[in-house]
Image (cartoon, rainbow, N blue to C red; front, top):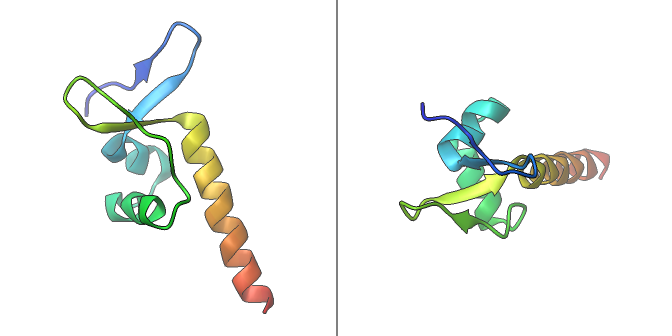
Amino acid sequence: MEAFRNTPDGTVWMTIRQAAAWLGRDVQTIYGWERRGHLTGPCRDEYGRKIYTQQQLAEAERKVRANVARQHVR
């Protein structure tokens, strides 16, 4: 796997495949988060691949967990 992309300000950028590995999720799960609007605002790398920051991914996972928790309360 290629290395994560870091910017001078310390931001870590990841492709969807890297994000899935980092989060311990399937790649299709990350695509599902995009479709459902939990993960938005991607940038693109020099190859045209979507890349997300660690913060964007963590926020998307929080949103998903909150939705799951709400569904179990009903």
